[in-house]
Image 1 (tube, rainbow, N blue to C red):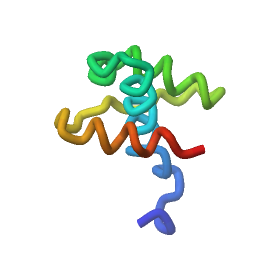
Image 2: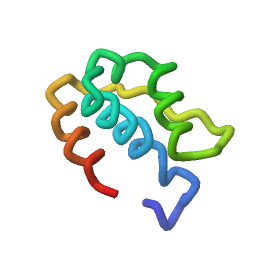
Image 3: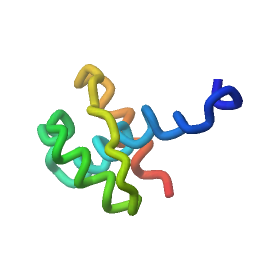
Length: 71
């Protein structure tokens, strides 16, 4: 799928990673706030493109936190 449209590389990863970073910082409730996801995304990317929202179940937040521990 990425070979067909590499522009979508960050479509799920960026909000998932930002949500995990928020949870690790002690603010898991902010993982479901779009502006917090955007602010978290801007910490790592100087991009004008806004990431999508973290639309996953809270059950996936620990997985996102584990992913956010990776460099």
